[in-house]
Length: 232
Ligand SMILES: [Mg+2]
Image: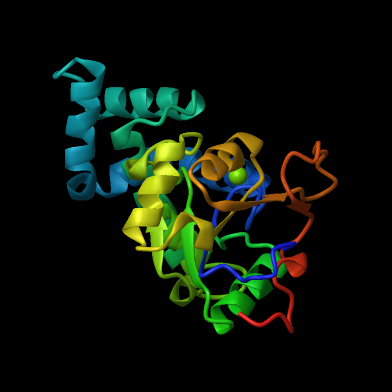
């Protein structure tokens, strides 16, 4: 932070910011794809509504279970953000986290930073394109234990798109905090531009040697953001 005053609230992105982008694409998505057909077969009651939504989405009410699974796999491979697919992925991931097969990836400096800021009295929020449910699973079963008690709230794209200034204005209103008292952390410049347009302070996470052009203040780890000794 070049700003002398500490923010009252920090809103953080997940992928590329608290956690590796690879975790979602190389761990979570392959896991739900591999488990999808078996999960549907093993939990007929739990997935009944999801399969009904698949039939509605596909426009064919007579799709049998195998047909629904084929549709879901097709959407999964295309990375479609469709309600019934997201719901089913959430159920599969929840089972994996509960069984301890999945652990949410969080960088060590991110876990330490979140704990440090929480200790400094700064309210912490998540804003991610992953659903609020998926956010809580990741942080609730992280490599560093249950981090969910550190957060005061979670936002997903129900509040609006991450590259739209209105979303950040809505978050500021929702957490009852002036935009200028909020620091937003992300690895995506277009998200920082939208947050800045709404009046938030912003910081680019340029992890693992990521190139950046200096448009936004940048750090390569949470260690450099409000380090120990800076009064909140
Ligand atoms: Mg990101």
